[in-house]
Length: 344
Image 1 (cartoon, rainbow, N blue to C red):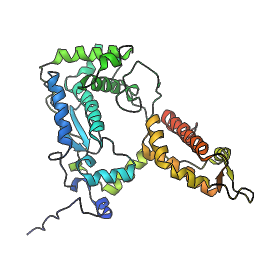
Image 2: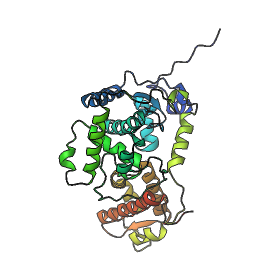
Image 3: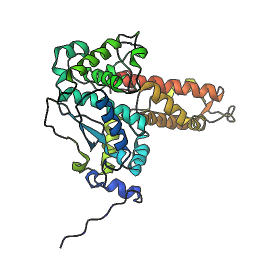
Image 4: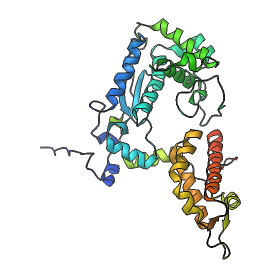
């Protein structure tokens, strides 16, 4: 007689035991969660536009639409509050963790899925409007913050990343029920892309998808990696180790503590008070993940402590300088993939 399967209660499990679990062991499903409400809303969006396409959603390692597969993966952590809390603690952000951001990402992924389902990216008119889907994805991309050739749906000017993303973002703007894109983009060149999407969607209204079969890659139910290893891999994939090269710049912002200035406020104590505000704002304006900004923030704190730095200006001025410094470094990372101007 086989052993009884252990019942896992995610609401009561310790973090240590949680991190030791394999992802495939997690007792999670889309059914019965808040995700269902979001899916119902995007299905309603499709019906309202007279589109017969109704893709299958599944729990996956991350947000994804596998290439050429008209199915959509939703991060497994969204299926339970405990997993969302763990994601927040580990990554300092829960991508799609609110109804608003979840809907934004779902509509974006729907753009990829519908393109694959009807092979829209193979059309010459699609390629003439957005570019070739076969273009390589680079690790980083240079975007033009003020460009009006692209819509703005997700953070980070994501439409500028790749032709596929340009289409997915444009489709998401067109699909969103309360989007006033006719007025919002009427003076933008991007409106031509939205109008093209609208004409393209009219051609496939009430038509069944061309692609009838698909595969669901990176399903949570098949992932044998433990949560602990999952987060190690995730951090390693996105974050960079970099040397302590801040000293010269930090000495321009602060002063090294001496007998004469020993009563001046500690630099590290002051900037730590504003950690959340700095992370939120740098992440928002650069489009970079909070945990990457946080790694940079922690490294700066370590150097401030090691150098025993104190504030020479007012606290508000010092915080402004630090925030500007971190923003500049992060933007350099966004544009080049490195915090410095040259690779290691």
